[in-house]
Image (cartoon, rainbow, N blue to C red; front, side, top):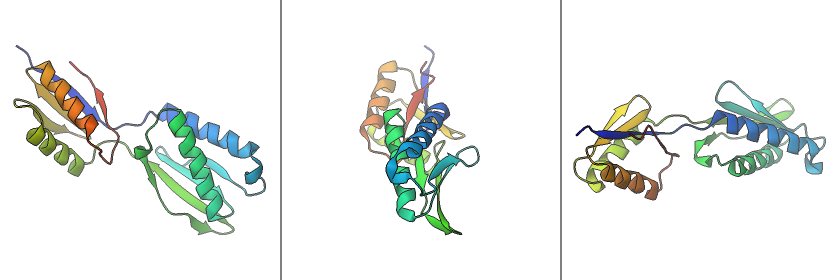
Length: 163
């Protein structure tokens, strides 16, 4: 009997994040409390978002609007790595990074979790920035998915390539 497997990944849907960013930009352009604050949000590189405003409070307010839009679009806030507002001339900048992939330390913790609390006969291995879980029984794989969903981890997980 061939082994069944699935991959555990942590990847934000870039299109949904882009849509949330564009909605945030529209909203801050329309809202009265952001008038004359120079508030703006835009991409900074491939996985970075830069928020600018004339005060630290305004940058955090734009961040709150961005988080609200991400939640509406179904993107987990665990993907965000938020820095501190830093003064840059007359304005403040806030760097937000979109985290992608499972760090090696977290992957090792997941493997020990699967070995300790998961069903017997389930194997997990690190493959780059994702985790491959395999077993002869599909029911065991379902149990591992339920186990990982039940745990409150510091990263958002998706389960792909279920075979």
